[in-house]
Image 1 (cartoon, rainbow, N blue to C red):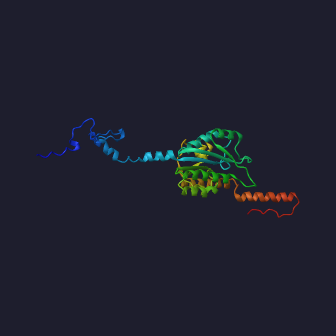
Image 2 (cartoon, helix red, strand yellow):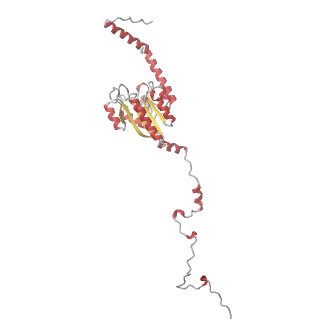
Length: 296
């Protein structure tokens, strides 16, 4: 008697509707799955371009980017540099704006003055400066102590440090002749703050001009007044370094001193006239005093 063959394996059995071993569809390879648009394979010519780094900025583009990102603040000590009656405050404001925009975007403009002093801002100039965008800061004298210098120092340092803290390029434009600001300007330059000073030639302190990066003459570059008081000068003055400004300031001081000596208005002559006047007043009042010494 012949032996029966073994039963077929489940995979070899014929498939029927009730068969529990129904074959499943084979899985699709990953290469046939749909890909999102951004993950589609790129043509070979474009692959090297994506691997290259972006091209470096040209020098001119770097300067333009740095210029556009620099914020400029203008601070005006009106007691040192005031607008004469022969000049229009609105024109002076436009010239100061043009001068400041050469270093970046002008975001702050302040004028500091003491309304109780004669050298304060005139009512007409006050209205024009306010309309031009300046912030007028009143600095009244307290206990015979001036507050203009203190407010300017605090506001300038606050303006610079708040921008340095967020890695912002800063430029400070200061209108003054006072040498007390030299230390503040030097410390700002230590923090890579660009410092510009507008000064009156012959009246500014040498320490102030040596503590700045660039300096502009109030008469020649802002008022556009040339030698002899004539209107002139170029609409865009050249940027003067601190050394050139200090030399020009020294020449102006020497010229003014020579004029005083020629007109007999030197310091010794003034002191002699005051001594003679006091002696004459004592003689009229009946006091006893020594007679004036004869010169020579």
